[in-house]
Length: 208
Image (tube, rainbow, N blue to C red):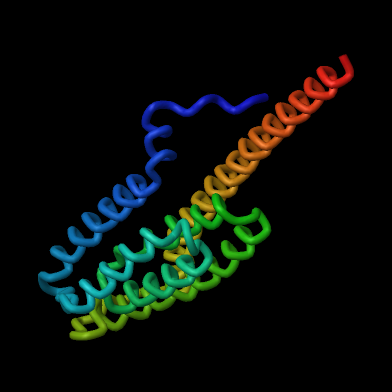
C-alpha cells in the first residue's frame, strides 16, 4: 500500500526542516524556562548559571539532532543526568527528542542499540534522582530530606516513568524511519523505471 500524501503542514516542514527544528527548540526552551522559574524559589533554588548552561546546551542538542543524531543522543543523556542531579529536570525530554531522531535517520539496529544504552543511563539517572530527593531536593543547598520507607520501590517507579516514554519515542522514531526509507525506495524505483522506459523508447526509435 502506498503511503498517503503529506498535508500542507507536513510539506512545509519537509521543505523547511529548520522550521521544525526551531519549533521543537522553542517548545523545549519554554518548558525549561518555566521549570527554571519554579526552581528559582525555595526549597529548590537551582543556581541560575547552571540552569542557563543546561538550557543553551539543550537547545544546541535539539538543533543538531538531524545532522548527528547518535552524538546528540549521547549529549542529551549527559544533560539529562546533570539536570536530575542538580538542575530543574527539564532536560529529561532531550533523550526523547534525540532518540526519535536516531530512529528516523539511522538504521533500526542502531536505533535499538541506542535505546538500550539510553535506558541503562535513564535507570541510573532515576537512582540519582531518588538519592537527590532523599538527601534534600537540591544538591547545592540540602534541605530536610523526605523519609522514604522503600527507596528501591521509589527507584523502580522513577525508572518506569523514564523508560516508558523512551520506549514510545523509540517506536515512533523507528516507524518514521521505516516510512522514510520506504518512500525513498519508491522514489528511486520510479526514477529507475522512467529511465528504463526512456532507454527502451530510444532503442525503438533507433530500430525504426
